[in-house]
Image (cartoon, rainbow, N blue to C red; front, side, top):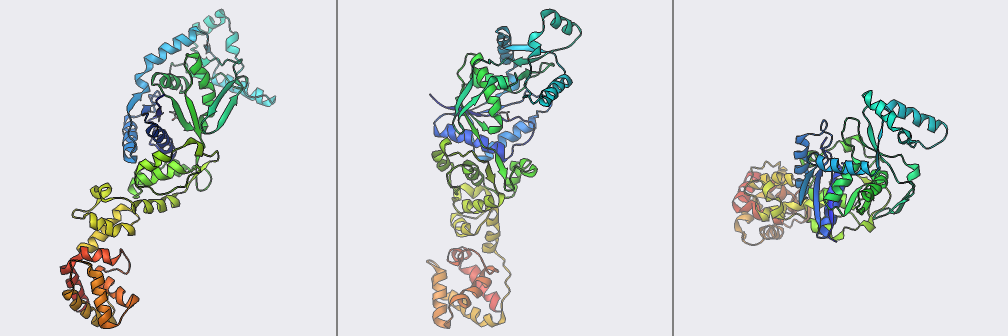
Length: 444
Ligand code: GLU
């Protein structure tokens, strides 16, 4: 069986870390299995869905490095929903209901007051044809419920949660269509999953009770339900997914210099028994993906940890992965020289500015004589090999300095800073001419 998964966002806003995680897991599983990953735009809500969000979702997935093998839109599939709706109505699995929201609310309150579960009492099923005709003639439009089969216990083996059992008698028959004809999410999603050949539905555990109802919908439509994996929800460092994190979109990560690979490495592994570790390519995350490693406890998303993982990720990136984002002229050698000192790729530009100059250095008076000797030595050494070791070796011999007094004045004069990338890597980039200039300026 070849695997097909889908990511099914509603284009009513930007996607946040929770959605990204779901998308990523669907993608990782499909890629690992050599299967297909589809993007399904859940835009049945025509008022709240916006084209700019569809565009943003595509861009966000692309930035993250996720590609998809097909795109579907629910708004283009109303005819398919209508056909299944008619079939289910004829087979008696859908029935019209005429209660107002106020009436339903009152029923619930009475049940709760009696200590009963607030399950819909199916009174609409008791209506006679004449009563229905009267309601219709009064202009009351029905909403539609899916009649759960009370004799068929609902069970599935969840790839994360293990064996799941639901008693349909304790569930309300779900509303699938509103009085104005618009669709709720449950039934169209099942119809799409059947028509698109979805083999695995991977989503948050907030959907578990939806799944219970949907399992019966698959069966009522003559289909075998797909596999399900419901993942524990994501929480912020403080215990729940904060409003802020829930409202944080991909632009935020991009603008603060978070690498897509760092975000993916984090979201692929938090909440699993695998270690969160930096990766230089998605392959590693694809290879190690395994539902069996997913825990049941909420996964904690800590932004400070993400920042650290980001720096470690940057240290692994190859030149060809970042060249488009580096300043003009910066080559692979320069990237490798500064990479270990970066927290974000964009900071490479600061070090490139140090290489190219000008730099302004504050020099202690007591170092001026030493820097004079350094300028002389720099004029004598061979710049073709390892000029830093050649220079410091010669100066050590001539001045007897060692350690910090030997190195720090040179670093200051050559870079204008006290800290930074390994001078052995940086000095060849600065080069003879600029180094001599900077040393001369420092002792002058
Ligand atoms: N549009 C639904 C949501 O975002 C899709 C859920 C599903 O994966 O079936 O919650």
